[in-house]
Length: 102
Image (cartoon, one colour):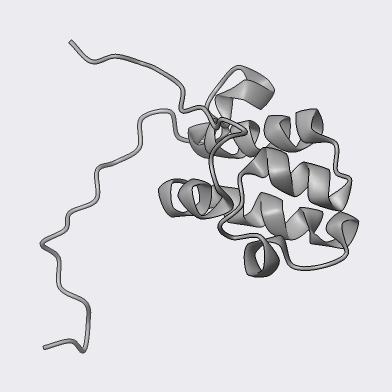
C-alpha cells in the first residue's frame, strides 16, 4: 500500500533545503528575484524562507503558496497537470542506448 501525501515546504526551511529537495522551487525563487531586488538563491541561500520574506519585504503567505504549488501541481487544479494529456504515461526504459553513444 502506498501513501499519497503531498510534499510541503515549511517557512523554517532554508532556501538551500528547498531547492535541493524540490528543483521546481528554484523557478519560483527566480520569479521572486525582481520583488526582492536581488537574486534570492545567491544572497539568501542559507536563510529560512521566513527570514528571506522579512529581509526583502516579501509576502510570505503568497511565496509559500507558490512554492508549495510548484512542488505539488495538484494544488492548483486538483489534478496532476504534469500528465493531463497522458494520464497513463508509458514507463521510460532506462536500458535503451543513445544513438552515437558508446
